[in-house]
Length: 127
Ligand code: FES
Image (cartoon, rainbow, N blue to C red):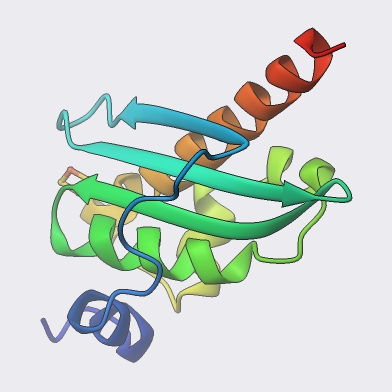
């Protein structure tokens, strides 16, 4: 895995926040349009900020690593900040990805934004 940054390798070998979140405030599952790999994200939200993230990803090593990395990165972020998150942002923050693997970070960015959208929809629907 010489082409990967130390952060990518570290998060792939020791993923953080993987698993289930009971009764999440928002959740979403997205698939990577390039390869079909999937990520499910579950969020706990408090005061319009991300309090907790759990994820389950079926994908390649950079998809696992960026899922783990992003789950730590967005903790404490406002919902607006997460909505502005891009795959390039994640790829850059994790120390870069090989050119043919940059698309792998789309899973974490898309799934986190979709989970926030789900949270907003639930919040709008509650009395
Ligand atoms: Fe599918 Fe990386 S090859 S996310």
